[in-house]
Amino acid sequence: MSLKPNGMYETRVEGIGPGALYGFKIDGTGPFPDPASRFQPRGVHGPSQVLGASEFSWADDNFLAPPLRDLSIYELHIGAFTPEGTFRGAIGKLDALRELGVNVVEIMPIAEFPGQRNWGYDGVSPYAPTHNYGAPDDLRALVREAHRRGIAVCLDVVYNHLGPDGAYHSTFAPQFYSAKHKTPWGDGLNYDSEGREKVRAYFIESALAWIRDYHIDGLRADAIDTIQDDSNPSFLAELTERLHSLGRELGREVFLIAEDARNQRKVVLPPEQGGLGFDVVWADDFHHHIRHRLAGDNEGYYCDFDGTAEHIAETVRKGWFFTGQFAQYWGRERGTSPQGLSPQSRLFCIQNHDQIGNRAFGERLSTQISLPTYFAASALLLLSPEIPMLFMGQEWAAPEPFLYFTDHNREVGRLVTEGRRREFEHFAGFTDETRRDRIPDPQAEDTFLHSKLDWARRQAPEHAACLNWYQALFQIRKKLLQTATFHSSRALNDKIVLVEWQSSGGSLSFVAALEGPAEASDAAWQNRKLILSSEDALPAAMRRPASWNAAARGLEFQQPGAVLLASGDLNLLQESRPNDR
Image (tube, rainbow, N blue to C red; front, side, top):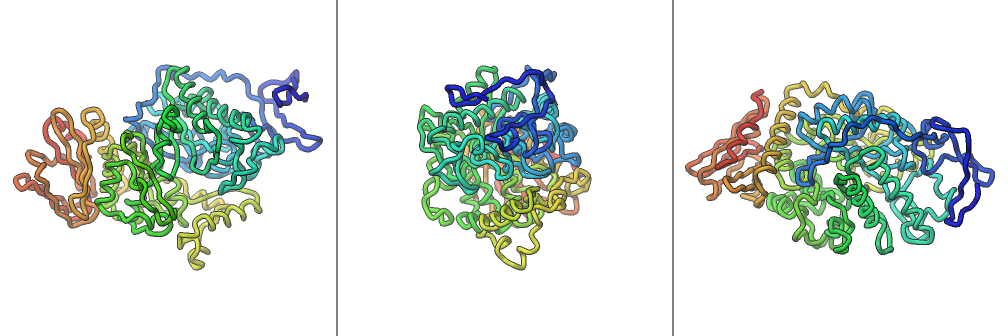
């Protein structure tokens, strides 16, 4: 290959075409896979494969992703989502997601990773969908079929590190990694030193390729707070500008979601205002307050969250809780003011892959609290104004854990296991020797298999009741977004959170009792009717109906739960009552 003036090596090889396997030799060593490979049919250490121009039949030209205000997101891991664990297998569950009421599927990272199973955050080929889930056209088929059902597709991408296993980038270009920045995973990527232009272009072009070549509607950028970059404009600002520009060029909106634990408003401000240009940021404060209150978590970062009704209501009202206060876990002030930010610029959840999978035993919230309490928390999530996200199986209270699983070579696997124990040393499950010995081995195949969803469980009475409740909540949320605007949230007492929505012709009060028994009244509840109760969705044997005294404007809960009180035109929400089971 000959060196060109732009610093790149180039040659032309005649007589090969789609399907050909190839690699590169460097100074007599190798062959190595292409760092910009579009497909790795034999894994991260195998040869790359030439792909021809896709002749895939899309038939989705008229599809447009929902506006930000209407997003309802469902996070899933392709390998654990279905028995098949493939792109094609996921297609078979899309009708269930449409019936649930979500309109965005957020897929955990799919860039080629080492071994046969992985969360995806150890990917090394950011242009290549992993062969473990199928061929590139299988991914296209999943996106096309999602679009046919009115569901947008968001892809989780990792631009804060690569590897470690199979990342040959520094073999091709020593400037690929930074000499001055470190990350939790090793040397940082070079976004701000000599050679940065090509490193930045490498990742930006990979992001553009997911949008252009696979019709992906949005990207979720992993842990951007771990990206160290002293340049101006920053890599992230350039990334979001290029992606939004491509969306405009294609005649559709491309939405960008960031994971950032700092509660920094600049993440969702446009570059012209000194921001990074993301549309939405994960806001974990809501999750942490809920988990502390309902499941008692108080280790590690949970130490800064007390889960009081007042602080939960404040978090719903503001979008995040820490706005500059001192945080004990961080050892410094955390957060900035959310003043002026849209609620739809923050994403809320009560479960996600991290908050389940980074527990020593991968327990879901639904397995640690009662079903009535879970119903109350779920309603609080879906009837708050922020964008809600579910983790796969949450809608039927799936009992399967979601564990951390990998398939590295033995040495890398050992280092990864040790690294996780250091990362979560503040949690007893990772430090208590009697418990640590029982932690499932990430490298064991059974750890992965135990994390797969069992879809047959949806038929069991309690799980069917939960699914029914979620479907009703999504119907209500859709109507609220069409007819009303968020008004406020506040604590009525130490057990009850109130969320209020209003329209020109009516109002709705959502009342969540996080504990029971509990009582509440409010002078504003004049002329209200109780139109929905979580008790209606519970299996009959578990019901302890909440009582509503219209004259006294008072509610009495016998156990945790949620009710909706409405007046005026919002009585149409009665259509969303869950079926009696």
